[in-house]
Length: 439
Ligand SMILES: Cc1ncc(COP(=O)(O)O)c(C=O)c1O
Image (tube, rainbow, N blue to C red; front, top):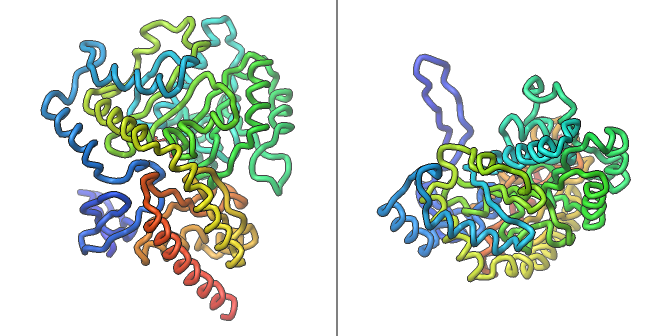
C-alpha cells in the first residue's frame, strides 16, 4: 500500500509504501491487515527488551497517573534519582554524573559541549578538533553531523559545520580496510597537531554507517593511549551498543578502556519513551559548574521518561540480557557464516552480540548501487515481504550490509524462524540477480 501525506496548500509528498503498524508483542509487530512481522532489527536497533513488556507498561501507566512532568530546575523526582543511581551503578565509580536528553543525537551534543567546556576551563582554548571515524554516525543534529563520518547525511549541510577544523572523520589509509587502524589514528593526531585535539569519539561497534564494523580492541586501546598522552578526552558513543546489545553493558568494556564521556540513547529506554543520556566521567566533571550540567532541553529528565527507562534497565538487569546477547552471538554468527558462504553476493558477517551484519561483497554492492537498487535495500524489502524486518546499512561501499539485531529477549525458535525467513529472502534476491545477468 502506498500512502500519501497531505500537505495543505503545498505539494503532496509521496511516502514509501509501508505497512501500518497497530500492535506489537515481544519480537513481533502486527499491521492493520493482521500480518505479523518478526522484528529482526529491534526497529532501528532500539527495542532491546522486546515490545510491550507488561512490567514496563505497568510502570508507565502508574507514573502517568501520578505525575508526567516537572522541570528539573523546579523539582527533584525520585524516578530521575533512581535512574541516575541505576546508570552509575552499571558504569561504576569512574563515572559521577548523568545529563539527560531526549535522543542520542542530543547526548552527542552534550558530550561535545562538556568536552569543549572542560578544555576552556583548563585554559586549553586551542583544542578545537574532534576526531571521529569514517564511517560513523553520531546523530542528526548540526553539531553531531559536524563530527559524523556519514557523508550522505551531512550532504548539503556543510555550511553548518565545515567552517572550522572541528570536523575530522579519520579514514583508513588502506582502501581494502573499512575502519582506520592504529597507524591512521597516530597520523591523524600528528597531522592536526596533538595539542589541538579536544576529543576522540568512537563507536565500539558501528551501526547503519559501517554495518556493525567492530573497532578492534587493540585500536581502541591505542586511541585511549593517544588521548591520555596528548590530553584529549575519549568519548564512547554507545547509543546503539549500550545497555547489553553487544554482549556487555557497554561496548568499551570489551577493550578494557575507560572513556571520559559515554553517549547513550536507544537501549536506555528500549523505545518505550524518547530519552538519551551523557554519562560524565570524573576527569570531565572536575571544574564543571552545576549550571553546565543542568543546561539541557525542556523535557530532559522528565519523570515519565525516567521511570520508564528505570523499569527498562531493571528488566535488562534482572533478565541478564547482556549475557544473553553474548550467548546468542555464536548462534547468530554460525547462521550468518553459513548464509554468506552459500550466496556469492554476500561477504563476511560482522558485529558483536546481537548487533550483527550480513555484508554484501564490494563488487555486487557497487554494481547494485549503480543500477539504482542497493542490495541491502533489496534484501530488506524481500525480507519484509516474508514477514521479517531488517535494517539496511552502509555509508561506504565496503560497509554495504543488512543489520540483524533482534530484541535480546528473542527465543531460540524465533531466532531460527528469523534465519529461515532471511534465507528465503536471500534466495529470492539471488534469483533476481541471476535473471538480471541473463537479460
Ligand atoms: C551510534 C549512534 N549515535 C547516535 C545516534 C543518534 O541517536 P538518535 O537517533 O536517538 O538521535 C545513533 C542513532 O542511530 C547511533 O546509532
